[in-house]
View 1 (cartoon, rainbow, N blue to C red):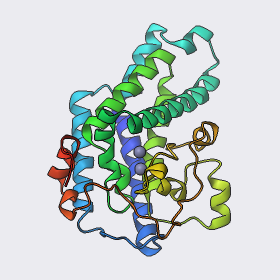
View 2 (cartoon, rainbow, N blue to C red):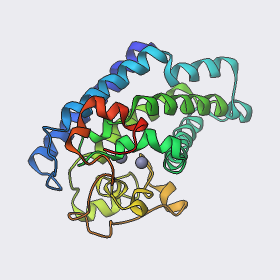
View 3 (tube, rainbow, N blue to C red):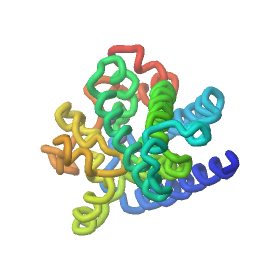
Length: 265
Ligand SMILES: [Zn+2]
Ligand SMILES: [Zn+2]
């Protein structure tokens, strides 16, 4: 599988979903934005650009490359059990999703890691650009954890590729400021993390921030007791963000990058 194909697939899928969700939330927003787009989008999109450059420069082989190396050497649990191809691919995607759920939970509960991750939560609204707003150090650390999981489990390269495309696309989808029709949403949240479900995770109330950790599959939260159906203040009235970094100046890219190293506005 040539690396250029992987990049085109990932960028193509993410760009398509980004454009579709941006249009949808433009015409039919779920919530009225508090800070709005103008002060937020330049910083959030600049962070996306920095993340892409950081990953390509520092870890050019990425997780798919590691999967190819692991399979060439017969490393990992899957190789050990000799699972048939399609079973290994489905199991691989689900296993990586569980790893990301656990990682997200840990990033909330270990103070040093929370400093990196809280920049994602400090956004004053959530919309499609919040889905790409992750500190570059968090992105690199998260990629390293994923690569370690790929080697340890021996996840097939195709499963890694599917997972990476899914993770990019669902993150953009479930941060977007759109509302699925209520009845459809109730069914959908058993299959995938919906925007209404992830919104609870961006509540300023710490008990709600520490819930709904899933990105793709909603099952882990229900299984491990971290699921919360609705915010206490209601979907429209709940406050988004963190108690710190509420100044509008904190939305600028330099401030976003330095937030892990500062304690207040
Ligand atoms: Zn979080
Ligand atoms: Zn989020």
